[in-house]
Image 1 (cartoon, rainbow, N blue to C red):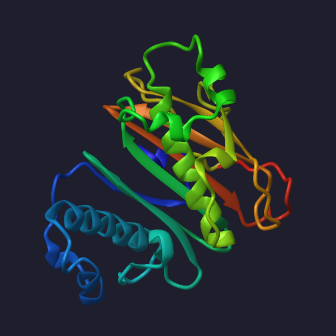
Image 2: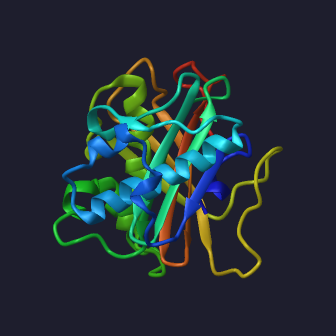
Length: 242
């Protein structure tokens, strides 16, 4: 699912398996979750199992994936990437730094946000845009996921926080026009829905363009979003597109 939202030069791996064995972890990783509850251990282990599959596709040896502040994954030198996990879906996306400056992915259950969360996430301008939209999409959850992808792209470049209210998002339905090297779009079953989104950053940083472009997809009860900055798009203000 995530792989449909990113170019072919990004290595993606995902699973819908419920559990993996902790034996897949490196000792350094095991130390990070030694006192964690079973759910946290499983989320951590399955995401890293995906990461090592993505590493293999890039021709890399498997290594431990530790984390820094705000849970930012620490990748091997010359690699950028992102992890995500939710109930029923875990994924990793990795690319070489020569191709990608930063990227973010996120997956969420396609269901309304818990009570009180939307008020913290959705801007008044975004709420107006959602008014009258078709009811087959939980726009609040999609927005939450997309802002998570924006944050995961922003943070490694700035090492500063970006709050939910500091990005104003606009969504569009329908797959973008095909580009060379891009994976296939919506499946022939027609059950999936996908589109693009634009994130206008209300907080500026010279390391990140003021407008970012990403993609989203809803399929089999999961909403997934992805966003990346290509390495040849370092100039602030340059159009960004996965």
